[in-house]
Amino acid sequence: MGFLEDFQASLESLPAMLQRTYGLIRELDTSLLASQRQSEQHCEQEIDEIKRGIEAGNVAPDMSLIRFSDEALEEQKHCIRVADEKVALATQAYDMVDTHIQQLDQYMRKMEELRLERELSATASPGGTPDVTTKSGRTGASGRGGRKKARQAAVELLNIDLELPVDPNEPTYCFCKQVSFGEMVACDNPDCKIEWFHYGCVGLKEQPKGKWFCPNCVGLPKRKKGK
Image 1 (cartoon, rainbow, N blue to C red):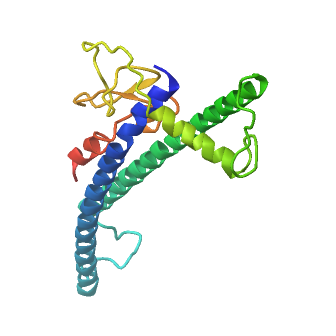
Image 2 (spheres, rainbow, N blue to C red; image 1 turned 30 degrees about the horizontal axis):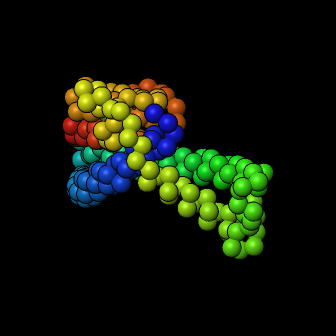
């Protein structure tokens, strides 16, 4: 599968992946706000109990010996874990978009090279087009005319029906539901329904270190543990 097909496949799945990721972030945000309120109330209650204990002489007024209960500390740790998951999802969404932008830049450079080759060929050919000057009066890759032509060429090529033979029995993977191609990564959640993903579709540029979870599964292992 060529660069154009790879780019089309990954681009078509991007909106759905971003929507799914943002949905997970909203769920985590709602969970985090509830956990924060509960933790704050718990801590306020324990602070009031400590104050009453000091006033009654039941608690030594030594700040080095005064601490929150294990339950209150665990609630605070849970809030930090949820916040970390939100950051991880936001970073993943950013990387996905950034990867597609870089792929688009690479594609546009290829289209610009192709356009220049065609113009040079037309100029050298006796029966070719005599004038390759753009409407803006500029030639070559510089100026708005060149960039506009490159964008138009990219759009035209994206609309080409390649009619490539596809084996209907070949399994598909990833959010894009395409066959295996290029570099792929497996989700470490054994219950993942998709399991394998293309690097570009999940915003990866290299093999992840340690365990890796797809956008569908990234919040599940920690959220199941609870508090």
